[in-house]
Amino acid sequence: MEKLALLLSVFLSGNSLAADLSEFAAQRLAAMKLQVEEVSESTIPGFMQVVTGQGLFYVSNDGKQLLQGNLYNIEGSSPVNLTERKLSELRIAGINKLKPGLVTFPAKDEKYRISVFTDTSCGYCGKLHQEMQGYNDLGISVQYIAFPRGGARSAAFQDLASVWCAKDQQAAMTTMQAGGSRAEQQPMCQAPIEEHYQFGVRSGVNSTPTIVLENGMLLPGYRNPEELLALIKRAQLAEGS
Image (cartoon, rainbow, N blue to C red; front, side, top):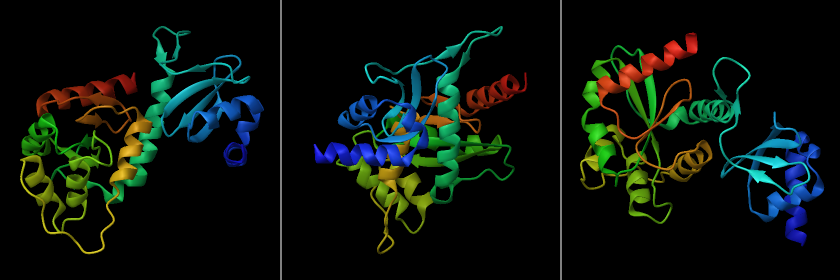
């Protein structure tokens, strides 16, 4: 009971909008071990939009109902996915925060930049990496975010940590994506793999490779360079319309 009270007090003090939820609603979120990071108003009457470490939810003020899924605004000529819009904002903010520590393969003439959630035990991640020159030649820079699908106890987690702690991260990534062994490590290195993984879960990532465009749009799965370029241009046109 004391632990629940502590969780509740942290929840309420960490976000002023949380006061708009009933005490019971806050208690239920704490009891479900949902790590609340942000609370804001929702367009659903009687519900709040709650960003957690486990994803985006809609919670009724009385704490009796919880929704997870896509919420659309259908007032206009075409539906607008409000859930995806919010998640895109979170992805952009998260990537900007992580950017200084990402393993990046820049294009000489950069026109676009993508972020890729990758796993060294993923075959299609290796295929994507093998075509790096093709992406770069089209002006697409690639920056990697670690996402070991098996979690902290998986071999991939340690493999990815070895990449981030390698003296030459690019060479280490290329070797690991080809199934090679771990490279020489920098001493006392603390790899941010867990932070990357949790960011992926919060952003709606559940497989690898998963590509994030500069506008925050999520593209699950492998895309060859030409296909990806076409999708990037299409996304830009949709934004401008």
